[in-house]
Length: 443
Image (cartoon, rainbow, N blue to C red; front, side, top):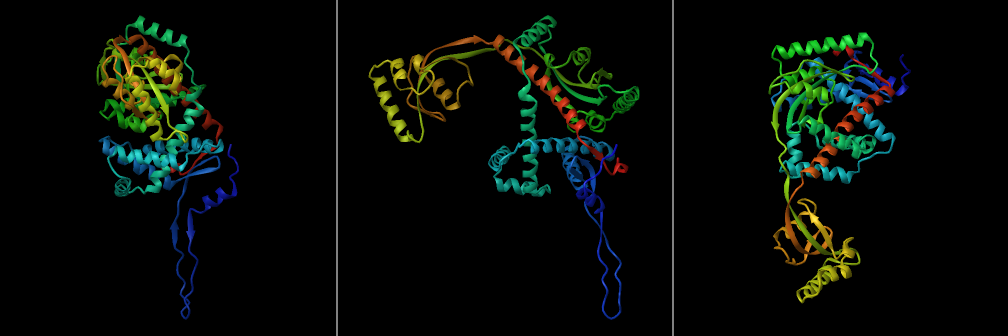
């Protein structure tokens, strides 16, 4: 059932063309013909927002450039337009919801993100802006796009990822299943096509989806690249990225996928797989094995920390730490001075940090700690937290396979649950919204 369109949107719809008023020349009363000037058109109405043809064409140009850069064959134009329009609608719904719920990205955060992107491309901001201009992208448009990406990422974190919990029993079951199947040594690089069906779809809906699957399979069998077929047919969020899921361990995937992949060789494409979400087609791009024991070097260390603040300046903090170092050199006990002076939670325990794994501390601290011989005490070390004096007590090699396996299991379960929850949330967001497609003749 169609809903009434607000006057502002009606006006936009009627503004598809503009008639330039007639002018009359003095003397010969020459009447100029009205000129028809094409303005921006609406391709979709999403609640109280519109998606314009200009937005669609701009996104098409961006995606097309990415495809060409990757050497990926483009799908047919009308299919590409439909896929990109669906992505724009999804993005619009999420940005609307973010605005309604007060989620914003401030200019300071945006500036830092763009600076980091420029650095990653080994450019200054000026050079980066010039490179964008050569690609036909203005800095203001790039800033807007990045702001939207950050907003959507934060929205997902707030609405979905932060609500995903993984229990210890889930990890135990995961590891038990992994051990029973003895499949934890296999990792797969896969690509994926999803032809979605409604949760309670009628027979007609399932038949339409099955026909679409058959068409996709025929295209693959005819030699069309998986990336192009993904862009043309897939309903998955990464359809325009060729459907690539990257490297996944056997435990990161549903049993439906794993059962199919076990019998496939690299380069093979699966038969359609049916799940509650729809039909899936997998491509096995690569395969590797082996979780070898994870043996790392741990360091048993302790430290004294003097924090810097408005009260404690850099110079004052260094002078205080130099005094502590002098007392240590004169034979005073480390743990006693840590209890007296350290501004860290470990002070009551004599500054003891316990066994420290690589990556547990900030780089400045870790570098100084790694350079110390057992029993030796460092010179004052500056880190983002303040000034430290470090002592290494001992080192050992430790097999962290079990701990690593539990951490990896938690991450994998969480990632899988978050992806499923995000797709469900997007579907619910769309179901609650009023979406009307325009210019369907182009699709």
